[in-house]
Image: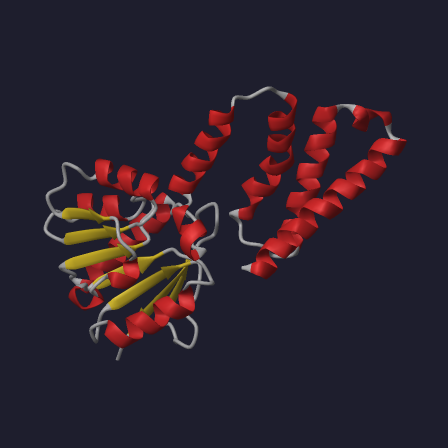
Length: 246
């Protein structure tokens, strides 16, 4: 985590220095909007070159403009507190466990549904469900299957719960998914982060029932050979890694 923050600071600092040099020589950069756009764009570019996770993109884009707004306008103190509280409620996983909020595409949900069909599954779990991008479509499509969505970030969990409030086969649980009893599921899905995958992988290999299918979106499980790898045609070109215990 320290190295991740250090890379982010490096991106912001170098971008600001280069934009400052440009502003000294080119009058157009004297305009605050142009200065902020260039600095944010450079910071984001450096972030991608350093292969930071994609969820750093909006942070780099909004960091300096946010600082500018906060220092330029006389905003009341409660506004800063409210902003911090809202961001904490949304990105609780990042604050507590370095698992940010990722949203799965509709293509991912459709592919997971096809895989569940092949498994003749009776139960499904989404570990780190976010706002229910996968769990809700699965519960809608399979009313006979028990679906559990695990999400500990308060605001995404609330959305997840409200979206499925009329589904009798669906439960949204606001707890750490490491407390989940994974033995009772036939298919498990997760869209987490590279930092979380080693611990998740060990838990599942230790506790998962033999024959259970584990689908990891975008991030492979270390020291575990996938039985299948699917590359989707969505905007992100999502890769699904499918694992099973012998």
